[in-house]
Image 1 (cartoon, rainbow, N blue to C red):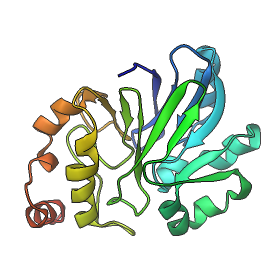
Image 2: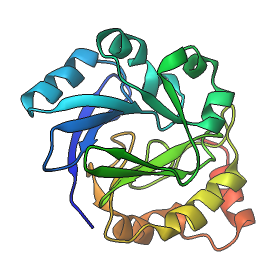
Image 3: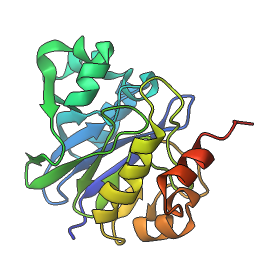
Length: 218
């Protein structure tokens, strides 16, 4: 697997990770989940000698997309999101002509880099992870030590179980998991290590997973 360019930016009051991702040998990059500090995102693009050519949305929650209106006022770029998320989110639909609907399994080329859109519902209906080379940018589907909540609007624990146990099962252990929040002692970890240590990957049936995921929050 290739090693793409990945820059991880920790921005905002909710420990969000925003990402710049693209080919290691070319300037074009996309921003994943632009939120909170658009000027900091632009500064990182400039600092690394990159060119911003698009944006990906892992899902529609405010802390992952609140920078989009400002970003689009500064850059004429497409915004890619799962079709199911566009149907679910009025905030995304309000972006209008900038939107590019993505289907499960679509492969999008940015420069020399291919982005595989893995539809991983559970946190929201159109949550998706992006696989570029050996980089898996997971939004709020899965974290280093946990997975996304399923008790919010659009959440579904049965679908989350299928996303973790079936969709992400096809991603090699050697891929690096880049999560949507800084909720662990490390900011990135191999997917193999995550599957070994993250308790949400340990369940062999959906009923047990749902009982654990939906247990009362302390």
